Length: 112
Length: 115
Image (tube, rainbow over all chains, first blue to last red):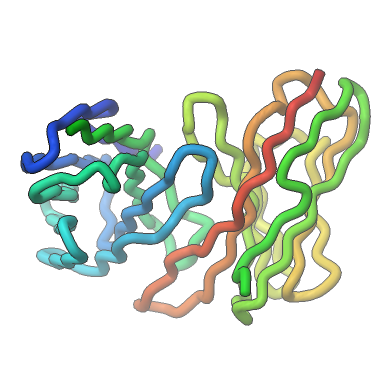
């Protein structure tokens, strides 16, 4: 059974600091997604990583995928308060979305 | 223009009742899904529906049933509601493309409270 873990589950960081969220998974996959969820809101797609070594950046967020290590990272650079949200990774082990397993989420709080 | 829309946004009902949540997507996607998010924010897929093929998560009670009148709609019917059904339910859709992006687009969620 596929397990998807995220580390840390809760993160409080100061504005301006850098930090990395880790997503580990237990079976072979070369497709991984990162989503953001604001409190009481829907999930917003951030990144789709489709191959080993894939790296994508959007603003202060950068995501990478190492399929050999079964690891994805979401790096936050110079955090700002607007980045406060819950971040989910989701691992795709099938050919369509019904085989996507979500991690437990990392609740990020950026404080002044 | 909302891509994936759900109604209602909030639903409070008594145990034992039957209720429905509606979902519509205007993205032209061929697959739709229902997810359940519990109080700890854990997301679990319940169903996916693609071109009349329904894929069910075997852990979902048969009190839950999806109904798709057409490609753009996937409604969720829940019979004999229980306290444990209280959660946020998300509808989502995606376009299946082999080897390509299959990211899902989510609705705003329906917060179901069973009392």
